[in-house]
Image (cartoon, rainbow, N blue to C red; front, top):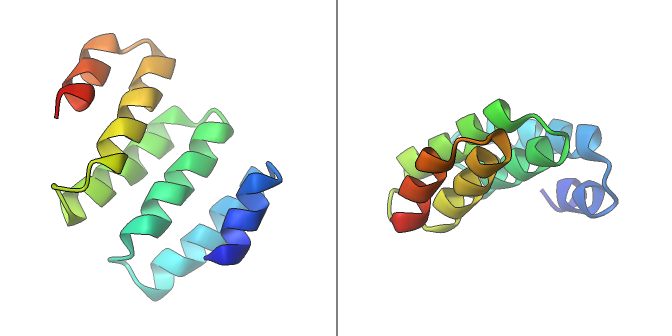
Length: 90
């Protein structure tokens, strides 16, 4: 997980995605790994994949606000402002 974060900070998004994917394979309920993989995918401009990761994190813990915020950012990047407003309103 920490190596993924280091790759993310260096903007090595492909490597970060790979590291977070490994973390998820080891623990499919690891919410932070979904959030950070989503962030790395967001950094790559892969907004649909980022939204999918944030959505899984939300399903795992609907009371955790960070994935709603991040998903709203991804929707905003896609120009889907109505969806972004929904997430920002949670």
